[in-house]
Image (cartoon, rainbow, N blue to C red):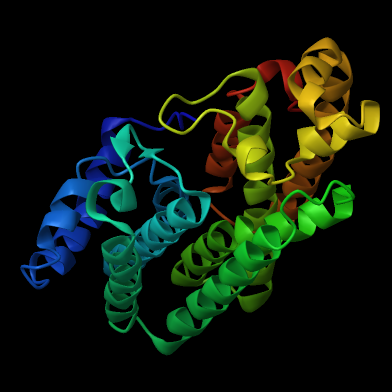
Amino acid sequence: MIFNFSTRHIKKHLSQVNRIIDEAVSGVDPSIKPLYDYIMQARGKQIRSVIMILIGETIADKSKLYTTCAGIELIHLASLIHDDIVDNATRRRELDTIHQRFGKTNALLMGVHCYSLALRLFSRVDNYTIARVSEAVTHLCEGEFIQVNHRSNHALSEADYWTIVQKKTTPLFAVSCELATYFCGLPPESHQKMYRIGTLIGDLFQLIDDILDFYGKDSSKNTYQDIAMGDMSLPMIWGLDLNPHLEEMHYTLQTNKHIIQHKTRGITKQKVTSILDLLNDINLPTAHYIHDVVRSILSQAPEFTTYQ
């Protein structure tokens, strides 16, 4: 999925985030340095950092914001490395995956090493940041565990799907929004509402990613990875409701595209409305950027989404 925030202004802030990441990586043991040199060739969308930067636009001293962004990017990187091992994926960000290039043992150790670098960065910020990110990582790991243990469970419900998403995908979005608001100096009730907004943004991000798996794939990842691994995405759950024969999934989803569009539009409208309602309750000077983030995510699948 392409995230459409590539302005010079955003790139200036991301360069500060990436400088901190590069400094953290520069001091690693020579035995692991080649793995970092390889993976840092493609840094991905850095969408969580972009969201934090947009929310924290008015912060005078952005050092804590940048450091936290860098730590969250390393957490996300670690999760991708381990996800690719679990999924036996061969491509990520238009490169061979780490385990494909350097072996599973090295990839496993590198993922743990990424977590350690992130923890060191968070320790420079404050205890609240450490606590909140730690909780998010706990949810992330639990979500991955639940998903793996429900593979090929064709009885998985829509409610079960959202439980997995809100454990595995949304926590880093949610804590990114919360901590950016915290650094802005807004009251605790605003942090909680921004956490909820981040959860909803993560929901939308995952839903659109699942839709694109069948109706317009990002070439940087494995095609139809979910169906190959037995991970039950929402389109697959809807597809099995229409036709219980998994081997006909692609045909079912293509011939019933209008039904999938209708269902997806209903969900996106509901979640966008919730985001807008929450934003109205928060005195956030940069709230308009949240609208831009949501529009950018939904614009990746315009036939399936709605934005009021």
